[in-house]
Image 1: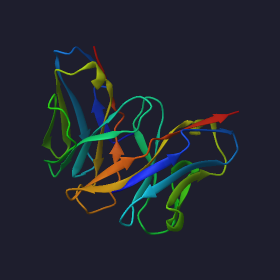
Image 2: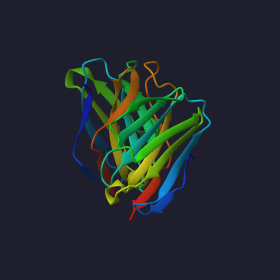
Image 3: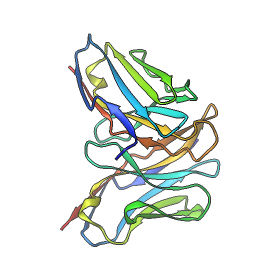
Image 4: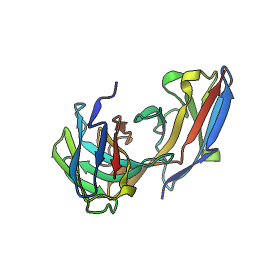
Length: 116
Length: 115
């Protein structure tokens, strides 16, 4: 069982919809990540929050808007997405986000997004 | 800059045979390296990690990997494959961006196990 919980597991939305993906961890980790994974491809980093502050934004389009309300929660707000944004969105956490620690990530099961 | 290259996008073995999944890394600093497994429609699970301690690292599910600096390799092995090992395997290296950790993943290797 994963200790990083993502909801919903599946989401279908139209290009004009606004929706959100949610992620929660209770391991006391101080860094949280959003990755995007297309079929048969490796995960690609989108955002990193360290100590609840946005630390890395990998030039992600503004139609994706991350939010970290507290150290246990991470949201990804979606608006005006395109069909090519359909993918598996993975949340992960790490004990530390800065140079301390090895940097291993613990992943959730993912939210599979389909944009029509 | 750090990167990893996985040799072989598909590997097929018979049940009970040796599993060998190849990963080579490029890093300007001593690397931290990881192997993850992904089963269909699931997230990634950490199999093992190398953090500059022992060069032979043992992980979960009977997997192990050996760090070889001279060959810049971190290959994943398992002595005897089980049907349940069929999955996608990713090698990853820690990179630093603006003082923060992130993982860079290889392209992945799909392992098929035949009876």
